[in-house]
Image 1 (tube, rainbow, N blue to C red):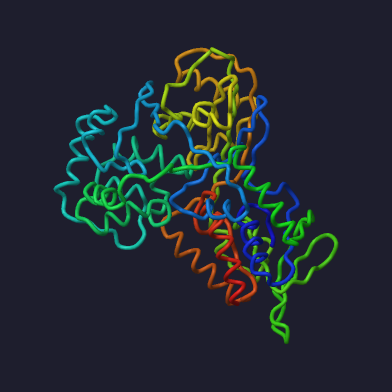
Image 2: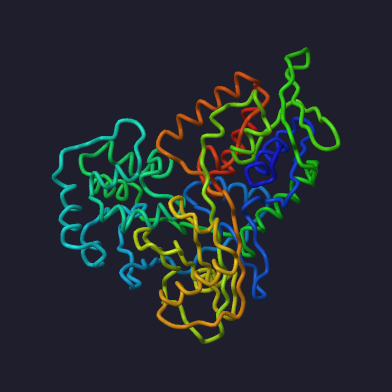
Length: 450
């Protein structure tokens, strides 16, 4: 196993559970990748993702398998939008930001008269089912107009992926929207039909371990060690598949201490790193997947200095507002079971594929500008008790239209080189903890059947 992020750990768990020989995880850095929980203001606060989706069961299933059962849900479920200098409530009935009902959008005041009229045209426009993969921007703006795309969908979906809607594959990042557009003449009516068929949510949408997402990594690492999985802190410099022989196609993993031979390997590192490790025999297309840098500023405010609006978990910021901050999470009110009593804590996110300031600003500049925008958003001066800046350089893969076909070509090229090498991780099948777990376990199962 090359890479000790959640995808690599999930692959190791799948192999260990199958009992098919010794498993070694090579990870020179910290185990867990972008999942990191550390103490801040005397409380465990995540520096990367702070929860996982429940409707995709890979994370909850893995938690159950390793005995991690103290999962908690956010106590605040509504979100605000910082636009036009005001914090406004996002309307009900949105699916990835796209409206399934028009009345709440009208009442929200987020769209102007022309934007509302254009959005309503979706109900009478002829069907335009997308042929193949398209960008989310093309899909949404084509049905609802630009205002819905930029003021509703982009802050949510673009914020999740740190990218503009025109750069995002609908097939990979918004499959619900794409399915509705293909099955129904109206996208709005299609989303409404999807919601009616699914029924009201049976439980929470998001969950997290009571001590932060880092507890998932800690518990999984302990379970892997108990299962006999080895961990090596050596840095891998090359991964090569040897020539076919009587014993199959052995894989050589090169580190500073020499060449280590294995029956197979999962390469669970970002695509550019995988390209360097696999060398000239690896798929050329690995270098075609771009990445975006992001940063998270965690801020502890003085007691009594500011109280987040009740029932809201934070706010999003449309990219056309030209702010540095892309989102703010009211950590203390969103996760009281994790934060506990104490001074308020917020997390500010920054980074976008069309805004590279996260890469160019110093830590001091980035912190000062984000604090300044927080003060503008909440409408008052704040004197932080403590701050923590977490940088994630080149961390978010950009899923451009056609990404699925690109990944399929990469897999075919790698399989032609060796059936004993498989890729896994966020670069290929989607971001988020459940998607990475699914990628790692699928890669391990592929090796088990090879």
